[in-house]
Amino acid sequence: MKPKIYIETSFISYLTARPSRDLIIAAHQQITHEWWDKRRENFDLYISQLVIREAGGGNPEAAAKRLAVLQDIPLMEMNETAMFLGEQLVMQHAVPKGWEEDALHIAVAVVNGADYLLTWNCTHIGNAERRNLIAEVCHNNGCELPVICTPEELIGE
Image 1 (cartoon, one colour):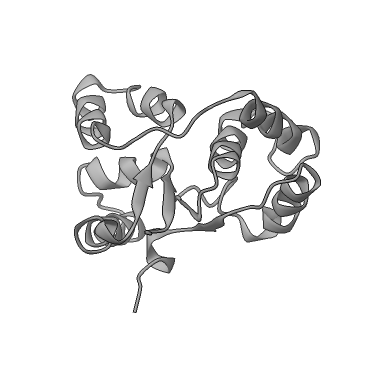
Image 2 (tube, helix red, strand yellow; image 1 turned 30 degrees about the vertical axis):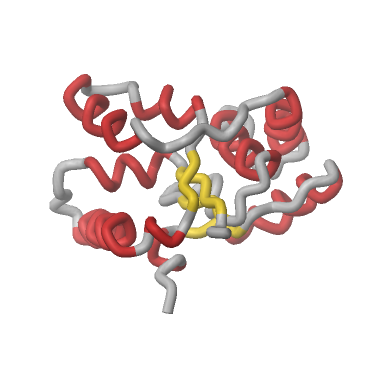
């Protein structure tokens, strides 16, 4: 059985965006493309309705590209348990107030038993300084936090 991976919206944005002139962003885009081309078959990929909603926003042409990539990826459920855990992550300051959708990405991955949460959002989701508190809130709610990582960290052998 392949590990389950929840793909957060920032990954899809890096995958489908026009090449950046910023060296760091361009490198992240390249890593994202390499992961997509070489590693994705090693995982069962999942997204949520939240990813679809976020990917569908903004420039219509760019949104269409993002949504096309997501078309065949199954959805993880955004149920009441995920909504509650997302609220707890914000209430207990694991994710800052105003960033409830980032908390919900984490909660959906947690509640649906993802092994990994793949993201380029290192401010609120993949933030090492917040990770212990995020894990504590999840644990206190009877859940286990998946490995939160960037594509650069999930490169295999």
